[in-house]
Length: 625
Image (cartoon, one colour):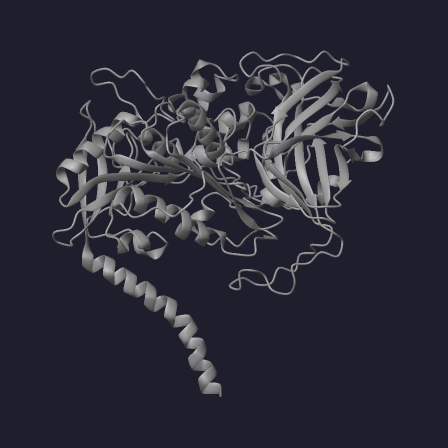
């Protein structure tokens, strides 16, 4: 019996390794790698790695990823392990894989420019990322043997931005493009700013390495900034001001210092909004993102909607799953303490992405009844399909702030003419974005337990027990009526699902490869969606406006889309606060250019949130019928 058990255990452990070895052997025996420099229209040469099948007499499609993160490993004898993940399904179909270092990055020549603006009216040798894609594709289809003339492009995060630009290239060979969590608008919603509020952890952890100047091609960008302080809350609080962070990062990081010169949504930022080019888009589009993507849960939603409006004849689809940044290419059964009841990533890979490219690039029959929007709803843990997003069956439903920290669907009966809640926002003691101590910004904060915040006096917490399932599908609109003792403040709104006190997932985690999660889930306050609004931008992101101290003022803004079901017996909780640190930089709470603020400029603000007859602070929920 012992021998049988040992053999069985060895079989479990060895079988995946054998399969992996078989896949790698197939790739090594049936693919070759070629490294070339492709010349752009202005003479600049871009380093490109091509992995092509050696199958004689067959024509194959291209899958291209253009990246600022390096197309390593370099050397024609060094192979990327394309076979190691779900992309091995493309290997089985003998796709040609192409990776390119974009202009000015790693082994490519030229000058790199962050989120290089799209130039609709290029003339002569003028370039942008769309033209670099065009020139690359044109060379590939004319020079790589045995290609079928069909090109697909995909990439995640910054490569997602380059995928968006590829869709604007105009090259007829580009048939299908999938921008995944694409960098879209660094002032409005992804990575470095949300509604004009700066996200210092994301920027400061990224740019000391990424932003280094490299006038000549190189295979290595070296290390970034290092601090002895490993508690990010402590580090950024001690840093004090954005001016001090700028001093730490040094003078050579070009984009960082350019960003400081543009504290409002001016022409410089607007030109770097990737949505401006999404007109008359020719390829079929598959936008992909994660509803819990800490880096960018904005880009895929925003670009899908822009394409639908600005390019209505485009074959335009979106997939949103319950994922962190890029989790759709990994295992997808859980995030932090929240479980999804299935491997959602595998569903996406096999049912959505692979059939998308196989259809447009290989001519395979498309799955029947393909939905325009395929979205995973947490809470109920199920995929739903729609012919448009947000769904046409949505009913905007107002929920009001009421007495005793309650939320109510009824208006006109709660509060008096003097009804308000009040808290003091103190930049010296900002509300942390997560309960634990971390060195880097976590990805799990997007679903973290918010009970710690509920216990803070500078966080307003309102609740509404749910007596029957409540499904939200789309953006939540916050409509706050506030008064400040100062001339500016931020407003953070968090949508939270509070679990019943006796809730438990059971003894086993969904992913059996991981240890059982023993975190107490009874009463868990799951962050479903949170967003910040820099108050001075409440009327215009280009022309900020000071608050008049003591004067009731409306602050209205949208939170990124929600796809969640509050199950019967749970509680809908909404929190309002004015700091979210160090996720969001501290607002001095005075009307000034925060990039230039000194430590003495940071002051307390007494904030009132009105309700009832005094001013109906409310939230518009996208309730799915």
